[in-house]
Image (cartoon, rainbow, N blue to C red):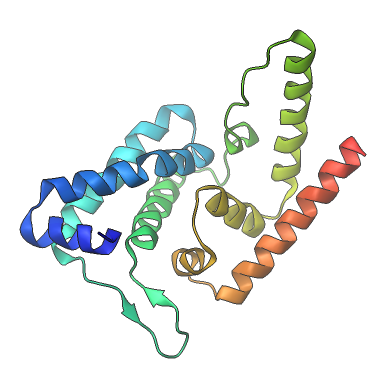
Amino acid sequence: MSDEQLMLDYGQRGNLAAFDQLYQRYRKALFVFIHQKLPEAACNEVFQEVWEVIITQAEAYQLPIQDNASEVPTRHFRGFLYTIARRRIADYWRAKDRKTDDAEQNVDEFVSASSPEAEHQQSLDKQVLLRCVSLLPQKQQEVFSLKQSGLAVAEMSQVLGTSFDAIKSRLRVAYQQLRECWEKHHG
């Protein structure tokens, strides 16, 4: 079943198994997305808040519609979910009166290395990658983060309220700048 149909089954019929399927599909990617944007201590709380909103808004959820002007589907579950997450993250930072988080939270742990030399190299690589990501303009950081969370360009367009072409352009620029930064440090 599609995500949208599962959400309808949960919202209109109270089908807990449908909700569980949605939760299992998105829990890891959503947590990673939130973890990239917030300090460790806040991740679990915001993660739970997002799912609480999904639960409370389930009855009002409707199937996606096709916008004939842009031919971009709207109200897909994934976009709905990540829009809620983005709003909760913004609420957190507003409450903390901060605009950005530490670059350390932009990249998950690297796989543990088997030798001290490899561990040292991974540590250096992680520092370079974190630095490169932190140097991206905010709009490129945002689309890069959403892409790493598994969203498609059309979904990012919906979540960010930006045109499909603008999202593609931001992604292209982000990857180009990351590649140039990486090569500069590992040339």
